[in-house]
Each structure stands twice: as C-alpha cells, then as structure tokens.
Image 1: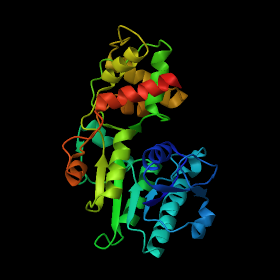
Image 2: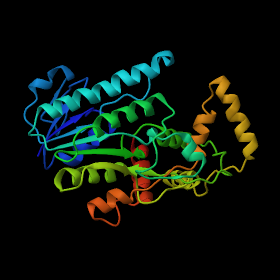
Image 3: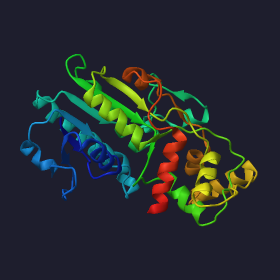
Image 4: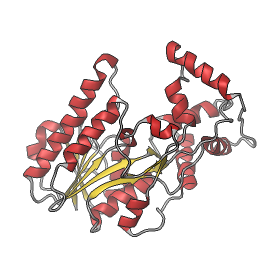
Length: 313
C-alpha cells in the first residue's frame, strides 16, 4: 500500500514508519520535512496537492499544549481541529483513498471517570475537561460526520502509549526512580490501562490490510497495571533488588499535592490523579473486530521493553 502519515516525525509516527515501511510505501506530512529512513518523502501542509496518489491516510498531527495558557483553548482548537478538517478535505477530494485512520485520545473523557473507577468503552459519553481533550472530541465529530457506509474511517482512542522514544509520565517516573528517589505513593492502589506502541502498530497494520468494519475503537493493552507494579518493574530494570516504595499517609500526600497547585511544584493535584487514579480502558471491541483473543504484546512485557529503551537512552 501507499500510505500518508501526518505528524510523521512524532513518537507514534516514527514507530509506525519502523513497522510499516518494510511492506508499504510511506509518505509523510509534517511541519518539518527532514529525510527519514523508510519514508519516500515528507511534505509540508502547503504541499498537499503535490502528494502522489495514496491508498490510506493516518492522521497523527496534533499539539498537546500551548505555552501561553491564556490562548491554549482556542489555539488547540484552531490547530488540532483545523488540521483534521484540512486532511479530511484532502481525503474527500481523492476518491482513490480507501481508508482514513484518525488518532484521537482517551482525553476525550474527563478525570471524573478515573475517580469513579469506570471502565471506559466506546459507548462511554464524551466529557473532555482539558483544551486538548476538547479539540480531540471536536475532531472526532468531524470524522464521524463522514459517510461510514461507503468509506472506511477509523477513529482510534489510545490509552497512554509507551515505547522507545516515548515522552510523558512513564519516562519521567523512570528518571525519578533511577536517581534513587523513593516512590512515596505506595498506599495508593490503582489500575491504569496503557498501550504498548507495538500493539498500536499491530492494530494500525491490521486495519490497513484487513477488511475491518469502520468505527470508533479503544486501543489499550489487554489488562491494566498498577503504578506500584510499574515502580517494581523500574527498580528491577535498574538492578535494585528491593523496590523503594514508601507508604506515606494519603492525607499527607494530598496536602503536598495541594501545595504544589499553588507553588507549581512537580507534584500537583492533576499529576497525583494521573499517577494514582484508576483509568481502565476496555479493548474488547477492537479485538473482536480483528478476530483475536489477545494483542501480540503482553502488558508487562511491553513495559519491560519501554524501560529497557529508557535505560539504553
């Protein structure tokens, strides 16, 4: 197949190139266009008309936050929704393109779902509470307005994706533990769904190469993992025989996080919720659509691979 990937130089884009380029011809669309192994050519957004005929589009391009918080809501909407509208217009103008894959996010759900320990599935009502989540929800509505009966449009809502080159809370947590800093949140027992990038690329390749019903799908590993279990894996990966987990009182931790809200400390209430709250995502619909009982990479094995890549880096 000939595949166009927007946001190709990002974390997910580079991993998709690695997985897909041995079997497909890959073109990129991004704000920068340096040469990249496995990519025939990367075009700018002003060069849409110059892109050769392709069979499928994978839309990854998005920004997560804006430095100027005063303009964050509108800027994220203008950029993320604007790029989605632009690439959908391109898709509609080229009838030879058979499949369109839009990467959304679990951010289309609010943190209230986490606090209530709700298992998220595709029927869970959207309730974004962040500018990024709101922009993704609008992008989903744009894609959902297209005619699913004649063209295959897939909306993917991945849980936190991890793997080589990942950014975010997992590598941050790894760097903290590697410095010998104890984990002070041991009393918080939680379950969080994540997605190994290898499982993500497996799902994308399957959607491209199989006859799968269009629609919206959650993307997550087969089972959630607790933060305490991740801490133990990190300690094991750096050679510590015993995990440094402190069982501080929950009230004390919450008080420190509350102080962090006002003092802009590394631990604030939002980050505490993401590190210790439950957020469980069901992947049953995508597995049923693909006809598999399990995704190829086990949740714990995927985490081990990610931690090994952080160690090498």
